[in-house]
Image (cartoon, rainbow, N blue to C red; front, side, top):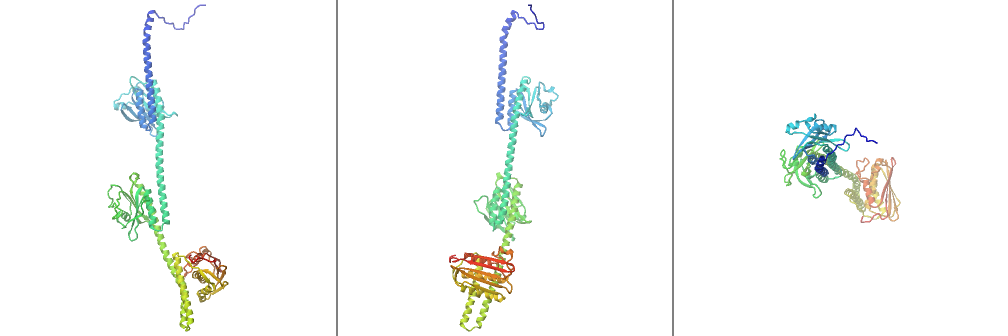
Length: 623
């Protein structure tokens, strides 16, 4: 077998003895250099790793995007041995790159349109650009160098990407010390840019969240304020319906108004038609009561001038007096008004007073229009409430006067019967010579006078709400005779029949005077309702143990359907011009005081029957 060669193979070099000696001498030197280079590379990597840890730590600790950006810029400059570093954030709404350029201790805010310059091109294309000489690239804009005298040489610019590859900014480093930026530098900067992009995006989200939370908190506070205002307006409306005098309306309104408006106190001036009226003052909270500071005239003091001029005033601490407005509610009041919002009370186009929020707390001050808006809302509602209360009190006063007149008219009419009987007996007495007959007539007159007095007392007692009865043993025959004597003549005068059917001849226990009033009231109502040929039948039945039942039937027109549910209410009349409307109300009260019951049945065109039932031993004498 012969030896073969591979012509294509490269001939192996031969080493002479002298060269072997030389290589043996050089090898240790190259190894030392290589070791030094490796150690330097390791040191650089350690430094870069420490820098990345520092950046990560800064990113984790800070919540301020600008502080984070400044820290990242400084650390990148150190890691990449760059003279200047700039981090741009992309603002899609403006199409700009906005960033912070840092060179040593100096920094400046810069802005570049997307697509312009090296940074703008990187942002637009999303690719890194690494230049040994920036001036050789057509996209480089030397304007900044010309303006500042700076000389850009090497440049490395990489995009900042989120995990979903969206470009959110650009990192740019200039002028590497000792040369230009390597591929390793580019990889490092891309890693740092990705880390910065994630952190800055998270910080922006956190910032937006904080802003949203602050806005939500502000909206919630405003909503709570509006709800409190609506509740206050509703309370004023309810107070207007419930209050029976102005003080009960004003006190809770002023107290709550001061609290809702974050003021120390509130006040209101309510003049009468004569132009004078009280100034009511109340502090927020529940420690103090409503005060009436003084009675002033329209035009006097802070509230008086607000009412006279019909315009709002806003007094600020330390401000000059406006249009001669005095900083006091009324003369003689020692309270210092450092701050006030006053508005007139206007209802139906008429100024009816003035309202003020006093000494609003400085830390809680809102805008002027908000304070004035709230004050006008409260004043409008309060003005309507005061007007309604005044109208209601005026109507009640008129009703009371009408009621008094109606009662007096009815009482006078009821007295005409006894007075006519008394007059008749008096005339008979003048013609009688027999002492016994004159005595009998005198007794009849006395009974009519007693009945007369009883009627007036009963009406007055009902009007005053007084209730008392005195039950005792009553002889029913005597009671029937007394009723007949009082009532029968009145029916006879009108040609009506008064019929008594008394099956009970024993005794019963009740208040004789008051039960006499029950029978006469029902009988007189029947007499007023019936025509000339009508009749009234009173059936009396006693029950075991001293109870009694009265059944009283008339032949009148019957009770209208519309009156039946309120028949026993006070001042209910069936178009009777001469009635008080108290007759049946008094009947029911007397019967109930006896622990009895009164009912009725009626039929239109046929008449009505009242049944009064008193139990045995109807009531004690102490009731």
